[in-house]
Length: 204
Image (tube, rainbow, N blue to C red):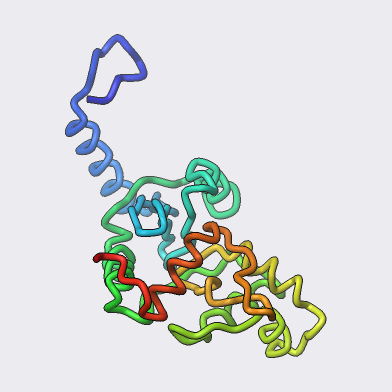
């Protein structure tokens, strides 16, 4: 049961609230009033917030970033017309299931890259070219982008990557081979690298 915030109507069954939300989502999509749909996804590296626009997946948020803050950021930068819309994220959830089961190496969902700009956008595009199971260093990416002095800027771009896991910033290491940072936490980065190296089965 979910408490009615207006009090006087008593408690409303959770199933009724869920049905009302589904109807609202359907009607909003029908009238083209839904600009951002989101869903929560429980993964081996913590609960993720997945958000999509009509263009494609626009945001993957880690739990430690705080999902409410992520939604507020999306409202500010994309649109305040946001609703929970699980069906919109079904293809992404399916592919994440396959990835974490070790059955998928590449994601094939449309992406909305509007949250990346300038040099950071170039870095994020380069991240997508790092093959599954391989790593590159921040310096290598800076060199590839013909800007060898921009190592820190590459690190900043990875730290603000709006589409982690799908766009694999976890495949970027320091030049000495150490992990460097990761917006989902170093434990998550280690888990993802171990999964891709085949040294860690998440489901055994």
